[in-house]
Image (cartoon, rainbow, N blue to C red; front, side, top):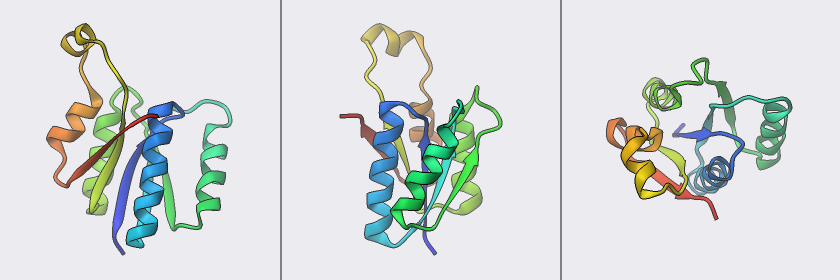
Length: 121
């Protein structure tokens, strides 16, 4: 079965990525692997409920290294031989783009498969 890996956090960009990944998985009849990069009380339960309601075959993988979510997403994609990765993007100021590293940029540049980048509404 084909696989889509999605990087998820309970932020608007994470939800946008998950929504798009669910849509793509339905269209392509794929399994979803959700790499959950931030965990707060109730997040995993809420995520599991949302995925169960989607009716899709799925796995939730908690990222053990929350300091490097890009590495966790890339590793999940490599291990599962994912067809593609879905990530969420957030808006950053020009100064922020210069001073801060970007997990999204790392996934875009280092992934061995195509990456779909989604902006939060």
